[in-house]
Length: 190
Length: 133
Image (cartoon, rainbow over all chains, first blue to last red; front, side):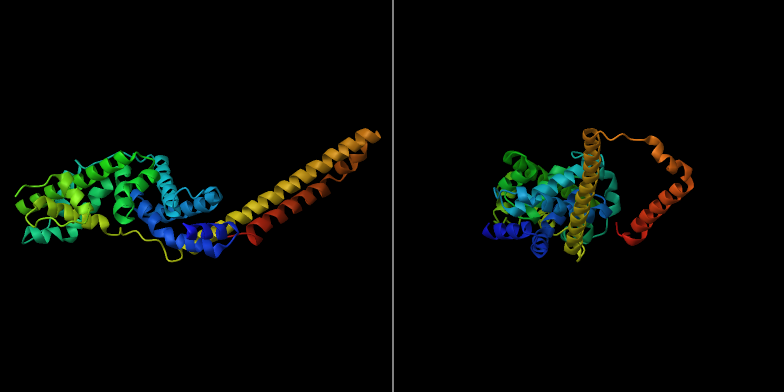
């Protein structure tokens, strides 16, 4: 926290090298969030830039009530949600049921179910299922698994009650497990 | 052996505990967890921080320019206002026909306006032009 304070003070004094340091230490966090939530590959980098521009503009209002990284993640989450709303991409859509029809594109021959588990196609399949999840599910999964944040931190970032965060996390992982199970069973039949 | 519920499996994996080898649901969950813990493919360009700093500096420059422009506009308006007030106080009588020379030399006035516009255009499109904007 003291380091955060020093860094913020330096940036507010106009030290651009300090701002670069802030970007470098938080760019993965922002890239994870934007990379998961934004479907258009071309807009991702620009949106990440917008997140850090917003961070720079709002830095003087940061009151150290939370960690700097939590605050930056909040901005990244809001910017991503705003982008989805602007592009009229539904936040709560899920086409998991529709995926059934697409399974055939991922079917490959495996000698044993074990080999299917570690296959490239299984990973591709899981990526596709994750892409179809509602934005809030994806945000919660990303913050928990990739950025190793606690449920209370995620609750602060997404402005959702902690119980909702836990519920989304549980449901999203169960859904992924069920889809993977269906996929592997179909693969075994083939 | 009693099979675990989804909640119990997730709690165990979150706590970093090991699951029994015969737990097929557990194996599926492990695969899901492994996948979720892997970095997504999207990565930012190596010059990302530099380009953000460049954008911030550009924003600061344009902010400064807007401030300068505002100062110029306010100064001009101020001078105009003070002139009017002084004219009223001093009782200066404006003779409008004194401006008739503008009409008489309208071609020269028009030429002057065109030159000023052309200089402004050249300044913006050639001197201050930035292709990345």
